[in-house]
Length: 345
Image (cartoon, rainbow, N blue to C red; front, top):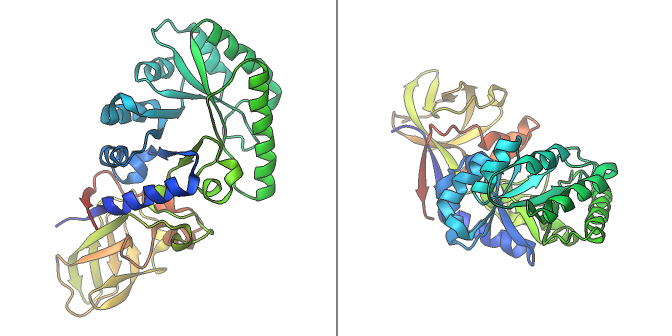
């Protein structure tokens, strides 16, 4: 048996329920970028749709089109990495909501000759500088958007932004910029149907940031923030476990096949334990496809060991904190080449 990534769909359902409860009355936009945070896009999207999720954040147009193929016409799918006119045309064809954070995209949209009306969400840069239209250019962007709306080329569906979540004070300043930008849009005769500013952490902790939609990815999969509250405090649970198999045993140690991990950071070697049938053992070496663990009596090829995640002593974020990164960084190391096994708890 080779390594597998075991995904508990019932745990995913419980997390979706918890997110919905935490961000209400705003709607949960489930972020599914990076193959649903490496959990498997098609299966997770289909499951979430069956659980009542109707907004998906798909990052780019290719992913958005893949989500559309799974859910059909009833869901809204928001994408925000848009490369230019070709992406805009493809996004319109796939019936996607398009996040526009660059005035050049408004020029590209004006020049399109394709059928269909673009549903755009205009992004204000509130200080994070993760694209977005600068406040001093906001008036010009609104004028341009109004002209596109008048031509029947676009509908302004939303105003949105990212925040840093570095401190409450920084986020309060960002929110003030956001609210001013939205008011300017309304004064200009553009009345967006949706506002969205918060992601996982602010969506849970700060009610005033929830607006109409909250973009929640990591928490939905049970990945807590590094340096933040634990899973129990948030009411979420990891939904996946990397299950490795013993391939070789000798006096020097036990080697586990972990499949392809795009290089689980070798700096984690010697810094964490895994549970074995004989109790915890230290991970002593890491390669891109294997892990070496301190030996234990009775170890045999075919034995299974959970390296991290659900049911183990370390979550993705536990490992991330050891090397000063975030849980998503560890979770995304699990290659699509590793088999996904979907189970119910």
